[in-house]
Image (tube, rainbow, N blue to C red; front, side, top):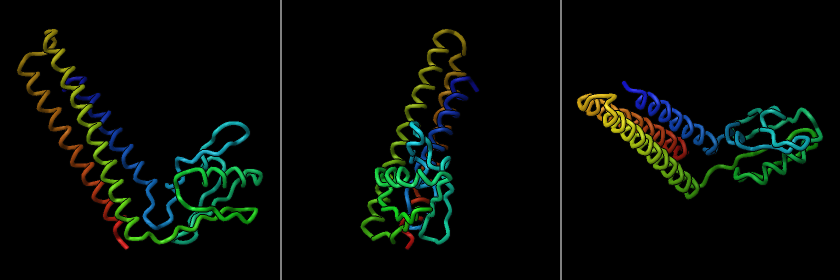
Length: 184
């Protein structure tokens, strides 16, 4: 296996992990602290991830409780949540912030499943671009005399098999997340 294939596999792994991480931010009607993973709060002049300035717990199936370590951050956290695309209004009682997740409507579920499929397609495009880079590198190596034509063919086939394997993993991840969203 050439360096091009090793690099391609690492990039494909990263693409898959980015997709699954993206999926955690899509809420399925149940409270999941992952939906807050991309929210940052202005903490003494610097943007800090919410998880680093507060404790996030799930006391009920459809509720998240955010307890800031510094009470002066309540307003900043509330503002950051409202500015994000979470789509839930925070309830602030002065010491903690509660996020109550409403049940998802059928239309919203369908909308989210389309979004999931779109993200999956984007990840597949990224995989194909990674494969193309690897194949280009393999062709250059063959032209430079670093590998034989037979090795070039084998490596190109290996790049395609690697791509197929990751496309299948992405399809499974999309299917699993869509099933989770559509389950009432």
